[in-house]
Amino acid sequence: MTSPIRRPPTLSSRPFCVSEKEIMETIAIALLGVLLSSSSTGANADRTIEIHARRFAFEPAEITVKAGETVRLRLVTDDVPHSLLVKPLNLELTATKSNPGETVLKPAAAGNYAGRCGRFCGSGHGRMTFTVHVD
Image 1 (cartoon, rainbow, N blue to C red):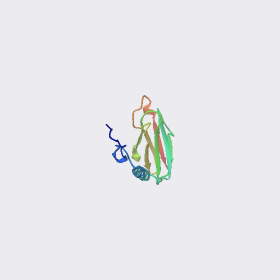
Image 2: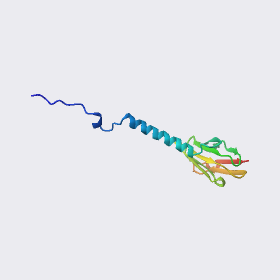
Image 3: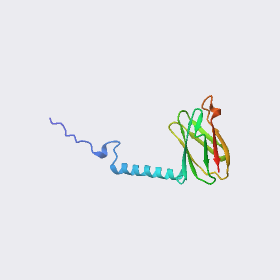
Image 4: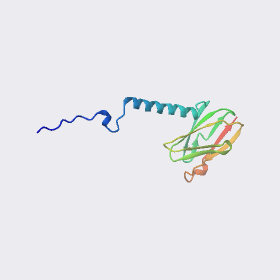
């Protein structure tokens, strides 16, 4: 008695197989999404200022920008989640260790604007202050 000849499964009969074309299309769509999202989050900013938050301080604790200047702010936390609130400028930015926060700031009027950490981060939380100087 002879046993039946078994053929190896074809590519189309294997589950979870994708063609090279499908992989390239997926990569192209992902890259396009990254490019579009970066242009909508302030790619036209004049400059970027990175602010580090840690218990219990911002570094730098003060920044200076010009009225009408478009500035991208990037908040990075070095320990626990923090936020940066500057209410007179309608600025609210939150960051976690795995997810820095970014926003675009374009202040209209000169002045000194006080800010603080808006997320309780421990006993020294009240000392976390920040100032935006607008010339």
